[in-house]
Amino acid sequence: MTSSGGHDRLTRWREHEAILYRVVPYGGLALGTVLALLAPAPHGLGVLPTLAVAVAAGCWVAWFVTVHPEWQSRRTLMAVYYAGLITFSAALVAASPWYGLFAWIGYIHAFPVLRRRWRIAGVTATAVLVATSQGGGLAIAIAHWPLWLLLVLFNLVVAGSVSWFAMIAEQEDVKRRRLMEELGEANSQLTETVRENAGLHAQLLTQAREAGVLDERQRMAREIHDTLAQGLTGIITQLEAAEQTRDRSADWRRHVDNALALARESLTEARRSVRAVRPETLETARLPDALVELGGRWSALNGVRAEVATTGTPRPLHPEIEVTLLRAAQEALANVARHAAASRVGLTLSYMTDVVTLDVRDDGTGFDAAGQPASREPGGGYGLTVMRQRVTRVGGELAVESEPGGGTAVSASVPALPGGAG
Image (cartoon, rainbow, N blue to C red; front, side, top):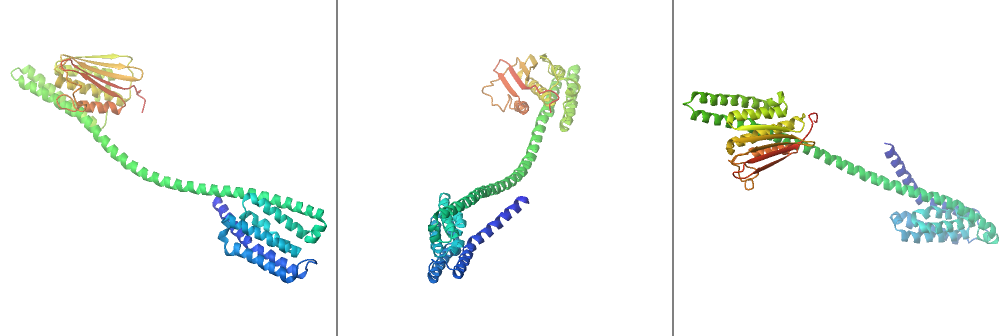
C-alpha cells in the first residue's frame, strides 16, 4: 500500500512537472513582454522588433515543446532547440532586461533536453543572460563589468547548486524507476513461479498417489511371494512326499502334519502381510534367534542340515532392515530346497559398523550365474528378483555367485540402521 501510494504520488508529480515544463516559457515570455512595453529599456530595440523576436521565440518553443512533445527523447534535435532558445533569450535580453524572466527558462529546460556534459554549458549560458538582465541590460553590464561578473558568479553558484541537487535527484529517480521495474519483473516472475509451483504440486500429489498405489502393489506382491507362494510350494512338496510314503504310516503322518503346519503358518503370515505387520518370528525374537528358528524349521522340513552363525555384536536394527534380511534368508532357503539338491547349508549373519551382511551358502548343484538373466532364477521363478527388490529398497546390495556343481552363495548387504531410526 505505501509503495503503491508513493509511486502514484511520483507519477502525479511528473505529470505536473511536464505541464510546468510546457507552460512556464509562455508565462515568462508574456510577463517579460508586458513589462518591456510598460517600461521600455532606454537603449533597447523598438517595440515592433522586440515583439517580432518575442513572437518568434514563442513559436520556437511551441514547435519543439508543445506541438511535438515526443521530440524530447531525441537528444540531437533538442540540442538544436536549446541552442535556439539561448539565442532568442540573448536577443530578447539585449532588447529589454525584463526578458530575463524568459531567459530563466534555460535553467529548467537544460536538464530534460541536454546530455549531462552539455548541461553545464547550458546552465552557464543561462546564468550569463540572467545576470545581464539583473544588471539592467547589456549596456550597463558592459559599463560595470566587474559587478556584472559578480552577478554571473552568484547566478552560477546558485544555479550550479540547484543543478547539482537536481542531478542527484535525477540519478535517484532513475535508480528508483529501475528498482521499480526490477521489482515489478520480480513480482511477475514470483507470480508465475507460484502458478507453476501450484501446478507442480498438483502433479506431484497425483504422482504420489499413483506411486503409493504402485508401492503398495509391489509390497503385496513381495509379501504374497514370501508367504503364500513359499508356503504353497512347501505344502506341495510335503504332500508329494506323503503320496510316496502311503505304505509307511509314520512317514505319511509326518509329511501331512508338516503340510498342515505350513498351511497354518502361511495363513498367519498372509494375514499379517495384509495388515503390514512384521513377521511373527521378529515380534517375539531378535533377528539372530529368528534365523536360528528358521534354519531349524527348514532343516526339519527338508532333511538338510542348516547351520546358522552370527558374527559381530548383535544389536536392534530398523524393522524394515530386519524384515528384509529375514525374507532374504527365507527365499534363499526356499531356492535351495527347490533347486540345489544340497546336503548342507550355512547362514552367516555379520554385524559390522555400517552394514549388516547375510550370507547363505549351499553345496548343491549350482547353476551358471554368468549366463542366467538377472531377473530370473533357476527353474524360471522370480524369487531372486523379489529378493533384490527388497534389498535395493532399503539401500542395500544383493550378490549371487554360483557355478554348475560348485554350489551357490547369496549375499545380502544392507545399511546397519539402528532400531530407533524412522
